[in-house]
Each structure stands twice: as C-alpha cells, then as structure tokens.
Amino acid sequence: MDLRGDFVIIGSGIAGLRAAIALAAAGDVVILTKAGPAESNTGYAQGGIAAAVGPDDSPELHADDTMKAGDGLCDPDAVRLLVTDGPRYVRELLEWGAAFDRDAAGQSALGREGAHSVRRVLHAHDATGREIARVLWQRVAPSPRIRVLGDALATNVLMRDGACVGAAFVDAAGVAGRVEARATLLATGGAGQVFRETTNPAIATGDGLAIAFRAGARVSDLEFVQFHPTVMQVAAAPRFLLSEALRGEGARLVNEAGEPFMQRYEPAGDLASRDLVSRAMVREAERTGAPVYLSLAHLDPAFVGDRFPTIADACRQAGVDLARDRIPVSPAAHYVMGGVETDADGRTSLPGLFAAGEVACTGVHGANRLASNSLLEGLVFGARAAAAMIGPPVSPTLRASRVEDVPAPNAGASLPDADSVRDLMWRRVGLVRSREGLHDAVRSLTSWWGAVHAAAPDASADRGFHRVSSIVTAGLLIARAALRREESRGGHFRADFPGRDDLHWKLHVADRL
Ligand code: FAD
Ligand code: SIN
Image 1: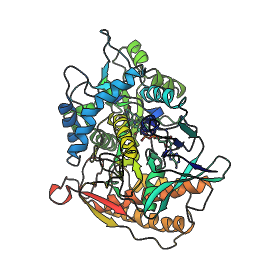
Image 2: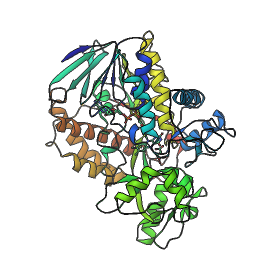
Image 3: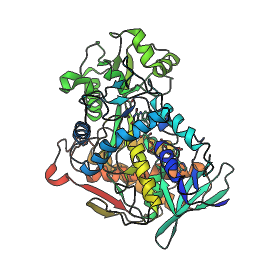
Image 4: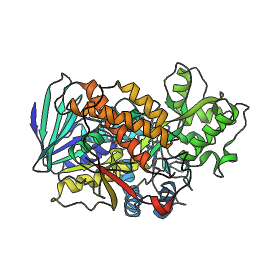
C-alpha cells in the first residue's frame, strides 16, 4: 500500500497524538502504529504528569529539581521550555476534559514523587496515562485529516537526496507499504524491552532509535538508562510497576526484618532519586542476603485502595494485598534518557526527520529523568515538533556533542534470539556496570549487529526479525556508550569508576553510522 500525506507520525503515544492534533490544522496526517492504536507506554503511566501549577511552586523550582536529578547534564534551555510551557499544555488537557484528581477545594490534587521538592504531580488516581490518552484520542479519532494505521510496523524512513521523505512499513498481513510526506515524526517511545527486566510493554523495543541510526541520524546520551526501583517480584505473577507515588504518599522500603533502610543510604530516604534508591536496594539486599519489600501497612487501607485502585487490583491478582502485605520489589529498566538527538523543536540531524517523546534526546533529562517529567516532555515537545514540521525548513542547532562515527559491521554470527540479547543486557549493561562486563556485551552485540545488518532490515517483512534487529541495535548503542563513559553519573553507574568526573565527562557524546 503506497500512501501520501503532508505529515507522517510513527507512534501513537502522548508525543505522537499531541503532534497529530496540531498537524491536522495544517494538512493530512498519517499515523503508523505497530500494535493496537491504544498500545503505548503512555497508556501504562501511573504516577502522573509534573507541572508547576501549585501555590508553593514555580517553573524555576521545577527547573531546579529537574537539573539536580539530571546530574549536571541537562540542557538548561530545553529545561526552561519544559517547565515554563508545561503548565499551559497541562491546562489545555484539563480544558479538553482530563479528569485529574481534585482536592477538597476543587483544585488539582498534587502528588509527590522522588526528588521533587514540592507536590507537583497531577494524576488520575494511579492510571494517569490512560486518562491522558483517552482525552487525546477523543480529539484525534474524529479528525477527517488524521488517518491511523494500526498494526503498521515502521521499518525504515525513506531517504531521498539526504532528506527524509516518509516511512516504510509492514502491515498486519505482512505486506510492505510506504507513506511519502514532507515531514516525518518519530514518536516511537522507549526501549525498555532491550533489558530482560523492564516495566515497559512489548512494543518498547527501541525501533525509532534503530531506524534513525540506520538512516544516519545522530543519537546521543544512550548510556543513561533509568532503572525504576519498585517493580513487584511475586513468583508466577507478571512484573508490575509499583508507582513512586506510593512512596510519595508514605510507602516505605523495608528489609527482611521489616526495618526501613533507605535513610541509612540516602538523606532523602525513600524519596531520593531513582538511581540512588535502586542502588541502595541492591546494596541492602546484598547485605542481608534477602529481598527488599515495599510496605504500606502503616497507612490507612481505605486511603490506599481509593488512591491506588489499579495497583491494588494488580496486587490482588498476584495474590498480595497492597494495603497490608509487604511486597517484594526490585529495580527494572524503565526509561531511556538518551535517544535521537534533537534541537528544541524536534529537528534531528537529518532534514525532514523529527523526533519527540521518549525516543528523542532533547536534553531535558540529562543523565537522569525527574519522575513524571516524561509525559510532560511528550506533550510540550510533541506540540513544538508539530509547529516546526508545519513551518519552513530550518537547519537544527544541535547541542555541542562529541560525535563518534560507528563503523559499519562485518557480517557476524548468526541472528540471536531476542531473549538472549535481553538477558545479556540485563546482566552486563544493567544497574551496576563494569569495563569487563561491558566489553563482553559490546563484543557479542557487535557480532549480532553484523548478522542483523547482513540480513538487510529494509527488505524484511518478518516482525520477529524486526524485534531482534531493534533490540540488538539499541542494545549495542547503549552498551557502547556505557563502556565509553568512565565515570558514574545519573542512571549510569560504573563499579570501576564510582565517582562523577566533571573534568573529563561533563559532556554529551553522540554516535552516528
Ligand atoms: P509511547 O507512549 O511509548 O508511544 C510509542 C508509540 O510508538 C506506541 O504507539 C508504539 O506502538 C509505537 N511504535 C513503536 N515502534 C514503532 C514502529 N516501529 N512502528 C510503528 N509504531 C511504533 N512517565 C511519566 O511522566 N509519568 C508516569 O507516571 C509514568 N509512569 C510510567 C509507568 C510505566 C509502567 C511505564 C512503562 C512508563 C511510565 N512513564 C511515566 C514513562 C512514560 O509513560 C513514557 O516515557 C511516555 O509515555 C512516552 O511517550 P511517547 O509518546 O514518547 O511513547
Ligand atoms: C511511577 O509512577 O512511578 C512512574 C513515574 C515516572 O516514570 O515518571
């Protein structure tokens, strides 16, 4: 099937949908989305969306918290845009009918999460992403100018004379198609599935990253992966995120003896930033030789059930009681701070190709994302990218990065199965990294990448192949970046270089094929 549109968007999460709403005012939009249209990380978002709307808050305070969490690598201009434009876009969601929780005075009820100095997280109980997606779909679905192709897996961008002119895809029946358009937006979300343990759904395989990299775009900051501390670990039950908002409302991490332990490791205790909490949990588990747990037993059960109905239900299905039982938890890959490098308007290093949301690296998160800033980024930068796609072509001003050329691989080993790659990534490129493990990972991944390359991703209609291809490519880019950065900062922790080293590493490194 060959189509034409003015704009093509790959992905139907918060960034893609917000962009589509803006683009439909200027032309015909085609959205390609690889699974059911409603499937996205956005739909699973629990804790909420951060915005400086409270009486004790300000964009400056929000910027401060964002930059502290980012551990010295946030782009201050991008952060300023996020925090100053954020409240306007969140109010727009409310005007469009978002049913966020309200306090007794009828104002938006604000939740607290780690590393925020005030309450600033708007939420719809514990299913905020579902509510935001509902509101956005209500505007996208009836639009005569937006065509949504579900089960349409984008496999590549179309390049002509060095510029992006659309995307190639494979439909549900395995038939290849193309959409030509004057501007293309990657809004493909994250890459959590690159790791064996993850909070992300099956769609999050880093496709946009792999597609952009193969086309020659710059990708940046990929060593910075966020591991969320509290993922439920109940035997035979699916892994399920236990939102940071639980700790924001008083839940505590406890050890086997029932003792709260976070204060011993971090002054901010249970609400320290995610990287610090995750590593403290690992150390406590190593110290005691036993799992660590999340406990809400000291809180009012009625409040817990009312505030967190979705999580309580998932716990019930796993055979545990959120309000009464201590629940075994451990960290899992959650969010990739790096991505396809963009300017503040979503322009990538390739003309005609834009990126927004988790796939993009705008610089707002630096080395570690502040909780609930991701939905906000998708909204603000989805809308900004749309405005730039409508406007005349402009060359991007990308941030000063060291750029490394990645050599094209030799044909290597045979294609791996995805689970072997995910297992290797978890063991060698996970929460605690070292030169030896990273070397080992890069060696295997480079050889697998050769096999992927030789099998020509452009030509294949096999979805299983594309899954492995993206996981290997994204995995290699993450592992290479982690091996290169010989310091610890934000989400990137090297046991062999445990300190932050501003003298040598206060910089961004971009990779390019
Ligand atoms: P997504 O919402 O992931 O959408 C990506 C879209 O691209 C999907 O529709 C997918 O199917 C499609 N796609 C991918 N590859 C292809 C392809 N090759 N071809 C076609 N389509 C493709 N952040 C917060 O700020 N607050 C929270 O409370 C929060 N809670 C979270 C809870 C969980 C369990 C998870 C997993 C994440 C959470 N996050 C939260 C992070 C946040 O949800 C995501 O970072 C954000 O939703 C990403 O939005 P996006 O639009 O960039 O991508
Ligand atoms: C959570 O609810 O803990 C996830 C929030 C986020 O990823 O920002």
